Length: 364
Image: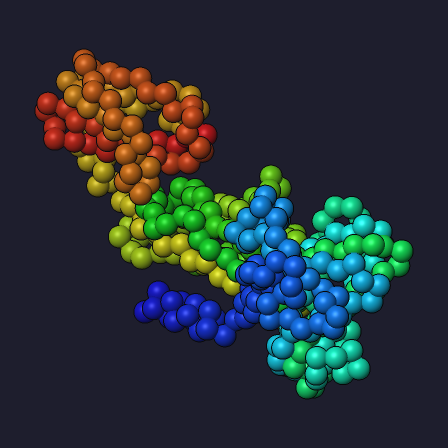
C-alpha cells in the first residue's frame, strides 16, 4: 500500500508541475535564410535569420539557425499568450559587434506601441556568446505577443539564438533514486545514492530529512562535502549519498525502507525518494559454516577463505549480484577486495562436503 501511494503521488506531481516545460525554441527551424525568422514578424526586415554549417550552439541537440540585426532600432514580434498566474523564464544567447541594448517585452498586439511589460533589459557588449536570462513572476493581463527589441549603442551587428520560453517556478527541484532494492543485515551500514536537480530559476539550498523508523546514525555526502543541506545552482544535478545503519532490532524477513524527504527554505516545494530494504537473517546463512574461516573480517585489502575441499568462491554485493567468481584448488583462497567500496558484501562458496555456504564480510 505504501508503495502504491508513493507512485500515485509522483504521478499527480508530474501532471501538475510546469518546471522545465519549454513552450518553444525559436530560430531552430527557420528554414528561410536571410528572411524574417519563421513565426516572427518585423518591420522593414530589421531582423533576419541565418544558418551556419558548423555547430556554434551551446545546446547540443539544437540546430544552427539564428536571428540577427544590423539596424539601429529593431523590433520583432511572436504571438504567444502568457497566462497571468504562471511563472516564466526567458533565456537566449547573444553576441554583438559593439554595444547593443537587448530587451524582451510583452503586449497585446505586434507593434511597439502595444508592448506594456518589459521582462528583460541588458547590454550586450561581448564578441562571444553570452547567456541572457530573466524570471517573470507576475505577467500583466492581455499579453498575447512577445517582442525582442534591439537598440544599437554604437554597435553594428547583434546575433541571438537558442531562445527559450518555459514555465518554471522560482524555487523547485526534483529527485531520482539510483540505488535499487537491496538486502542488509540488521546492525550493518548501507549506502543509498540518488540525484537531485535544481529545476527552478534561482539557486536553492535543499535539506535532507531521512526517516528513522528503520535506520539510524545518518550521514550525507555530496560533491565531496558532508552535511544534510546541499547548495544547488539552476539546472545543476548533484549526486547525493545517504549512509545509515539498519537498526539491530529489525526482524529478518520483514519489509523495511528508508524515506529521504527533501525541503527548501521557502517550503514551497518538497520531494522524496524511497529505498526498499530486506533485512537478512545472519543465523540462517551461517548454519553450515562451523568449519569455515574467513579472515580478516572487517578487511581493507584481502580476505582469506579456508574450508576443506573448496571448489568455487563467489563475491557478491548485498543485492545478490556476483562481482567475481574464482575456482578454488585446495583448502584456501585469497581474494583481493581492495577495489571495492566500503560496505557489506557476501562470500558464497561451494565445497565437496556441503552444497554451499554464505558469510558476510565488512569492507572498510
